Image 1 (cartoon, helix red, strand yellow):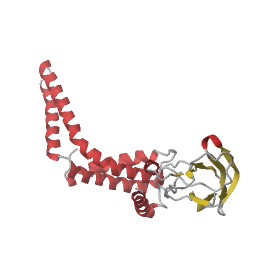
Image 2 (image 1 turned 120 degrees about the vertical axis):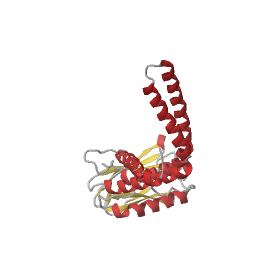
Image 3 (image 1 turned 90 degrees about the vertical axis):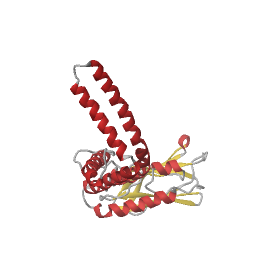
Image 4 (image 1 turned 60 degrees about the vertical axis):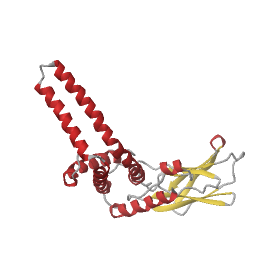
Length: 275
């Protein structure tokens, strides 16, 4: 699975590189349109378009019957039952295509969130850098944090035995793309920290090597499975997705959904797809 997540990182880095200096809305729009078109391709070849079209006609016929016989209660009840039954059939026809689309959607959304959900630190901003260990060390571990020039340690380390966590407060002094080093028992681990103002892949957590941790935090290579560290985390500020005043980690998702749906409806005719 690490190979799959690594390939996804490289792919999205390459796709979004030309848009890194532009408004987030530009890259988001391009990706959303591409996803909308990709969704049409999947629907075209995984759904039964003839049955979908036939069921839709039956639903429309039921609605027309209600309007035509609006003074006949029995006819209205029968038409409503037919509409309900055909709607269930309609949803059933969509089940397989939707399940197929879920896998690429989860992978795509996971990558996009770490490009558009956070912004880089500004010089002068601070963050808490936290290392979670796998095993209880008993006393405070003899660990060392190695920060490159451009970053500084403002406080720490603070040891929380109940959580097996070591924490430092770091301050960004200058712009740059940094690797912070953590050393424990002769082993060295690194965590990316970005003080940049362009769009880039930002990882709030370097995860463990388990499938679930990599699925939740796919933006950085996982930690060694046989190492002493469970995770390394820091908190990035939320991005605004290029919409003034919308400072929220999930704002980009609204743009993505709306533009993808619009694109799908705009291109459904040329692709011969019915909804």
